[in-house]
Amino acid sequence: MPELKSADSLPRGFLSFSLVSQEIISVLFAFYSYQQGDMDLATFYLAVAALLLVGLGIHSIFDRPRVARGLLATVLVASFLYLLAGAPDSSALLWCLTIIPVLVGSFGYRHSVFILGALFAVSLWLFYAAGDFWLMPTYSDVTVVRFLSSFVVLSLFAVAMDNAHSRSLNRYKDLSRRVDQIAHQDQLTQLPNRHDMERRLEKKYQQYRLVNQPFSILLADLDNFKFINDRYGHDAGDDVLHAIGALLGEPLRGEDVVARWGGNEFMVLLPTANSEAAVNIAERLRAQAGKLALEAQGDTLRTSLSIGVASIDKCTGIDDLISTAENGLYQAKHMGRDMVVVG
Image 1 (tube, rainbow, N blue to C red):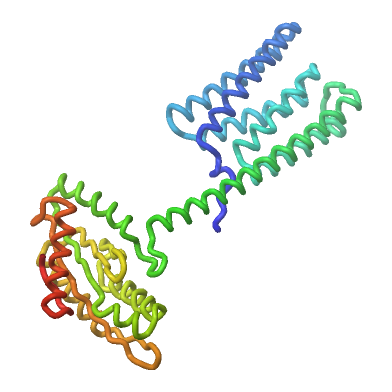
Image 2: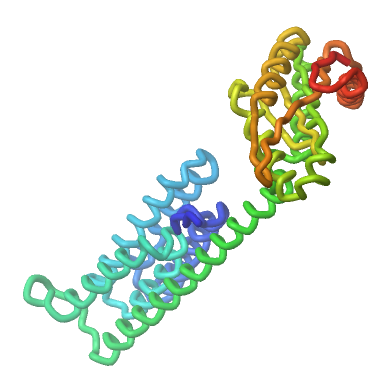
């Protein structure tokens, strides 16, 4: 099962939520700093909120999530380093912790591990070695240990949660693909099933009504299939159906679609073929089926197809199209099998 990249697995609204939530947090911290009389720090928090608002506009108005995500990371990481190295108020350390879930949620656990690891390493250096290069705010040992331990715990928790989310989403995507496959694919022949072909026919008919581009269908029935099943068993019958399904698709154009219509019947949708072209294709398929030889219990099984042809420009709708093809197939059976008849 192919795994999604963790950043690609994010719900589309989560980036907006991250930007808005971090804006609110920054505004609240600005209000707190204002109350404490620290106008410089309050102005800084408001500037962060303004930049995040720009990122929200880039994401929501211009639909550029990558640019918005890059701006978010740049603002948060730069603010983290500035507050850690230059803020005189220890409450700034609390703001630094708030960016952890936002970074993990916005970039996924794989990328955020490197970002958080780098921030933690820089934090250690700033607390314990940076004093040799420039003045650092004076924090007590207890404050430093609490901050670093909180950083590690929050990072591990956020990464673990995002990892679990990504795995669950991958399982959900895989299950959805399997359900869709069961709903639209015949399990024996691996061809589209009747439900899927009906959907394609309806879509093609709507296109026909708009652009008047005729299309045709072939309804092919495997001759003497009941005899094969009764004489050689259902396994041999399944092998014949699988072989016929594969054979029908080989000589067709890329735009044509073969589906198992039901039992030993197959339908071929020819999206751009008129009646004359459809008959030529049907004759080619019938000839190919006559050359197919399969072994069963030491005997060679010869196969043949009876095919009914119908074109939409001679019908009044999808039901009439299918009914016309069925009528052509019935005539082909009635007239001796192994032939093509236009309904």
